[in-house]
Image 1 (cartoon, rainbow, N blue to C red):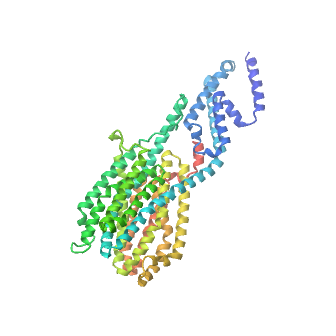
Image 2: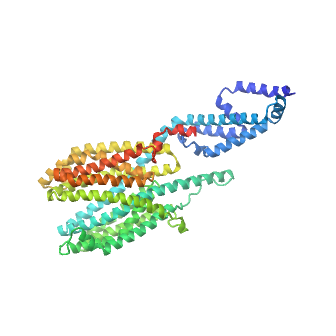
Image 3: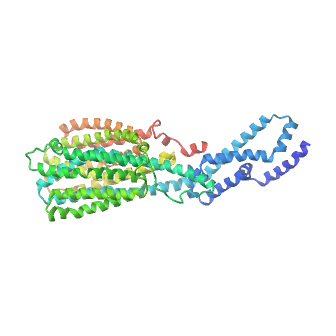
Length: 598
């Protein structure tokens, strides 16, 4: 009886094995009709459009790996019950085999089929996806970097225009506006840069998490016959955006009050006595500029939010429109209305509020600006991470200020030459800083998803671009810096000192480029604590050199200390990336194999 029941299935199975020489077909057929159709569709999708599938992201086309495994496992059980009810009972009764042994053997067979099938899928998509993945990362970074570079260059150019217009009023007005602008910029950098960097990372992380939730809910709607995901795009409600905006308003009001009522105190700290002819115009200029502090802080926070959305074009357009208005108002208010330095301050403040209003209007189309519940805000993590970056910014400002003070002690000619070298040195860093900001946004988005494969691609490409940019800038400045310096001064003695600093300006560019790149990488994985701690250590070492080297080498000692400062920043970044215990542990692993084995 048992042999009779077994003869037909065995003959059918023999013919099936002869007919199915492809091992992948055997695996799919063994899973049963319902699941084999899904697997075949997944494989057919891969064969038709390999460029859309990445080895790490196959789950996006197979509706996530966990759903696939659930889909694979349940039909196998159904398959066993559907095809072997009579054979199973008769086989156990006639052969005397225990039912648990049959269950164990089938479970082991099922696991082997699933594991082999997954390996086959990853093997199919691996080669083509890695190439398309790299191309998409490179193009996305370039698309983000170019507008970011334009946006960072707009405001410095506007400040140059403002300086040129004020310079026509006379040396007293120019000097008073210069002192006030320096105070405003120091206070702004101290608080605003941390908020900008933290907002970029946290918003990118929130968007990625929100996208994963929407993808999961969208799949459930499709299963239940609902509307497909993405049919209607709604405004995002993200706590990180509301937190960043509220903090920006609070910090902006604090800065405005401090600069307005403490303008005299700050000018005293800068060494500007009440008897100086520069005192009154400087105090009036700083008090007016203080009114624009809330707009400046808010606009920087909004730039961080847009970077989190991986959008650097919108901020660049808003900055362009607002600053164009300032350039238009400068001559009208300063000369036609005869407001002088006061007119320059009014034009600048007006443009800052125009920029902020344009950014808020654009962001309101994408996101809900204020949360329905205050408990959803993330003040704790913002303050903690911002505190780390506040300490880091203090270390940078103190080191750079110490370098300037040591250059002042070398005399007016040396100070003038140092100022020219320093401005060129910092201005060209905008190229790599824009690349670092774009890399930060992409890394934060991918890292929060656990897409370590893409993070590795971003890191490798950004570092290669940083090295290429640094070397290119070194060669260009080395060949042209002597001629470029004549744009800033015609004094032959100053030009002679400037030309002696060409090695400092040009040779340090690769260090500068990689130092800024590593900052963006640290922020992308929210490694704010290491960024702050390493910067404090680097600042202490560099400050010690700046204190003693100028007494032996003069102005060369100042440039030596600043070059060491950037070199140590670069070294600290390399050390962190090479560590196997920090957030970059996955850089040391073959992540494609890890995914397959998992």
